[in-house]
Length: 185
Picture 1: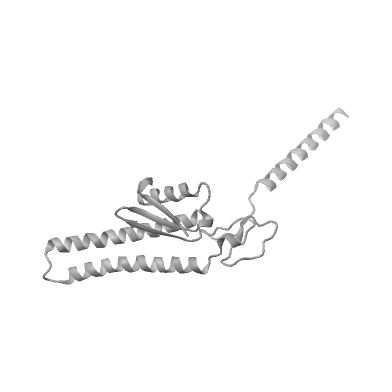
Picture 2 (picture 1 turned 90 degrees about the vertical axis):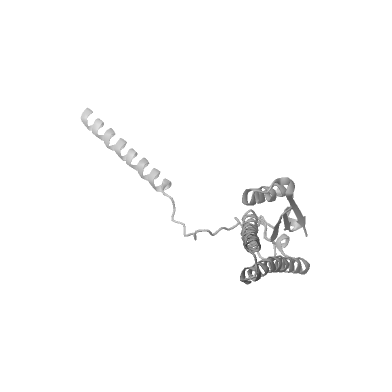
């Protein structure tokens, strides 16, 4: 009888240990989730460029992200103006480089101007991409000799957002905080 009790107790303990291991394994294994690399979504929110009905569980107001016609026109014309000004510098430099009568000093300066414009263009694009990743739906950056000007929507620039904008610009373009101007529309 004593032997039977010991064997019974051993079987019960092994069964309990097996059940504990199985439960631990089944609860600890990650569930397969299909995601696309680089894809991000707001939790419980639907973003659109037009005002939409709000549901009770929506955390982000979609109406805040709808652009007015004036804002759309501003961003479109400002980007066009910025790009055309940079294109003019590149065209003039190409013209100077194409002339055989240009001095080597003039050609060197033209090449440095093109390199500077291309560097600024890349930095501006990177700043805009970084700000969009940080939650700004529309933004425009312009780098000049005097610093950087960033234009964002007024509805998106709340409390701590100016420091986010300035730190993003500083990390990307290495421009000091006092040379960064934030403009809202």
